[in-house]
Amino acid sequence: MKAWVVSRHGGPEVLLLQPKDRPQAQAGETLVRVEAVGLNHLDLWVRKGVEGHTFPLPITPGCDIVGTVEETGQRVLVNPILSCGRCEKCKKGFEPLCPQFGLIGETTDGGCADIIRVPTGNLLPLPKNISTLDAVCLPIAYVTAWSMLTRKAKTEKGEWVLIQAGGSGVSVAAIQMAKYLGATVITTVGSPEKAEKARALGADHVIQYKTEPFREALKKILKSNGRKGVDIVIDHVGQETFSDSMRALDWGGRLVTCGSTTGPTAQINLQALFFKNLSILGSTMGAKSDLAVVLNLLEQKKIKAVIDRTFDWADLPKAHAYLESRKAFGKVVITR
Ligand code: ZN
View 1 (tube, protein in one colour):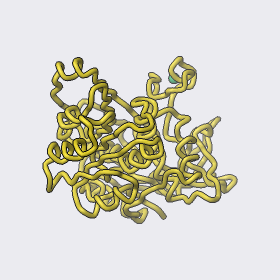
View 2 (cartoon, protein in one colour; view 1 turned 45 degrees about the horizontal axis):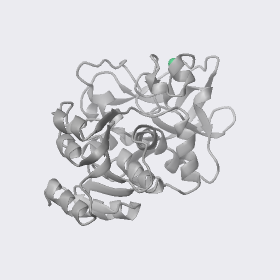
View 3 (cartoon, protein in one colour; view 1 turned 180 degrees about the vertical axis):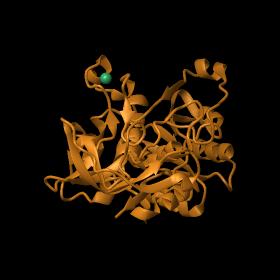
View 4 (tube, rainbow, N blue to C red; view 1 turned 90 degrees about the horizontal axis):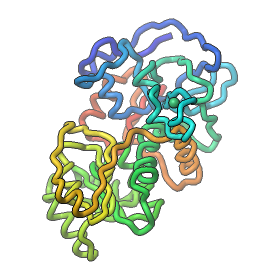
């Protein structure tokens, strides 16, 4: 069999398709033949490396995985969350706080291989009415968005949510989920095409940050609705947007961050933070149980998977380069 392998960090060219021994399932594991893998910004970090962080190289990337169980042919969605299952955090049902928290495709070999071995408890059988391509979008982006909006921000009906970078995988999920939760959604995008797609997903207001200054555009939207700010900001852009995101908050507002694509450092006005009773909440993934929740939302057609583009299995480096170009609106998937 073959697997994509990152042996050293670098550009898309470091991704190499290499022959590999067929994995042997250990006790409690199942062999899965991979059909499709969804890409996330996380895949880019695994490939490029992150300063001050060590990835277990060589590694096969790929966190969003759909395949079939080798023995039975059952189609399954793989839950990428790994944890000890025994500590207090795991028992309380929030695995990202487990000392042994990890992700398939980040801390162990992932789905960009013909056959993989997966802890059997991480397999969700897929209902017939959910396509492989739809399901493969869910694990990282949709679970992350759901956890940010529900567990962290505790979004309530009628609240206003600003979602930065509306075209990203997390944001296309967050726009739909915020609408499902009864919120009014403002989002930012970089092109008229993306603006149209964001509106089609349910965004009430779209700011095209490349052609209109963000602060003025936001002020105009809020003023015409009798508001001073938004209740919640969902931000994974980081350095470039953080100040604007903080300023966008109304009194009592919550900013939830799950990434810092443009850089890890930000300045905070502490006076605004305490005086306006603001909260800044960090968020990584969600609970292991959240994947079944978002799968259910998809099955009930409350949300949908948004795929920008699929690439052939052999074109993983091209798929990486495309995701990195920030042209995508929604998910980039490799499939056989
Ligand atoms: Zn644990």
